[in-house]
Image (tube, rainbow, N blue to C red; front, side, top):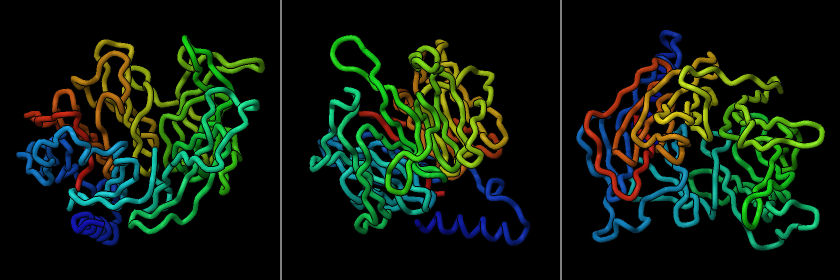
Length: 369
């Protein structure tokens, strides 16, 4: 944990002991925001502060993948984890030029235990699948490994069954897609129709959440997904008749997604580590979609507003860089350099008055406090 995040945790703890206040109300809007702008990594003391360089690309190396992380996400303890050069790495926002490699990875997701993550690899050894028994779109087996972010060797490794694609860990186990059928596509190849399942401790499917659907985000005891309309004979394409729903792993029941005045949610979104707050694009069918934040506890939806990078058909991960840091959502629009923060408990949103200079696609990494 970084010094600033430790101090923040101490303040919240003192508040809880003295007054019984909640961590939601004690937390302030994000400060000391760290952004990778493509040619340098900068820190903003507040959303409108002058950028201060904390990490510089080598001269003439702006096109090199020196700092860029794939799927960066800030851990509750303050560190940022992502993938760089084929490995999962952890970066402290107090020293962004250093990174600790955790292990090979093509993907990763946080574990439910604080300070731990799961890495996903596609090993070549002993992972062949019997193609006669699987849909064409089912890839070889994948392997997941449980790491702590300190950098010690993986605590445990599990090779999953053929056609199982892990997505996120929930309070009831790892939520995954299990490829059940092929959806014909134009040209060669096919995309897969997937069931949404929860895996047991040994990586085997133990509970089917949806016979045909797609996970958009999962954390805590919630899985947000679109579910295809199925009959006993077949399922219709999720591209034309899917609907968003929430599966509660505690009650083992589905809930209707909260209504947003700005339209239906679209594609993948960003969920905080507790599974309460969910950011998503709404009204993607319109010329000017908007970004919304949903409180899944209170079942309310708040409009954050449009961004230049949000166009018709936009999906959040493709259009904007968004990271939850506690109950704060920090946003960067790489197409315009717009920066914004949203404090979910209070509903306060702050947009930077002057855009930052972004090259080669910028990223939000998180905030120190």
